[in-house]
Image (cartoon, rainbow, N blue to C red; front, side, top):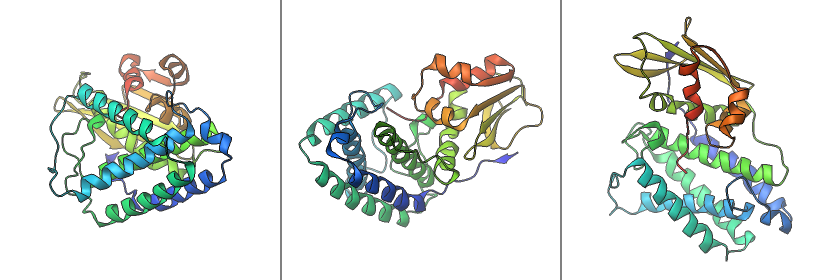
Length: 277
């Protein structure tokens, strides 16, 4: 085992954007209206949501009058605010044609990548990763979180129109490595003996190994497998990203996750959510 390291995703943004733009330009008109797994959102709505994310971030970075950190909200308040803003944006953009959405998305994707490329990745980001329990996050983590957002919604679009997912290691491992950073926060109220460990093995080309170790009354995340965990968790990579993003019902996920050892400790991972809304 070794401490988890920074996740470098900045250079994945341009090729990920290119994959999405190529897909969108190939879609017939009927595909834009197809429903996605996002409640009440069509393919076009999800594209508009991605555009809104770009515009929101660029505004935050460009407006010098904004504070480095916004007002502190309770987690539920923050989720409610995000849901409200997402709904308002998607409703407003339904008057924009797919062709214009593509042009705007291409422009703002490029500008967002340019911004990310200039940041000192170790400095505090304007936006903390709340699902990991952070009040302040370094830019590398905030950028990795944004990468997972873009990757995830592209998969929603791909599934809706019957295209293959981006599930090779290049695309998916950084997503899983980012999502798994929510484990210590998920287990924050779970107690165990000092030195107890929980291992997580995600199976597949994009999978990996991580361990939670109980030290000084807190859980700490490591990469690699502990030699003697009290609970061992095993799941495949496709299930993992769906589970951590509320993309599968808990009952269905439970039957697909293998837990050896202390089941009560292992089952807590089923509650982990690595998205805000």
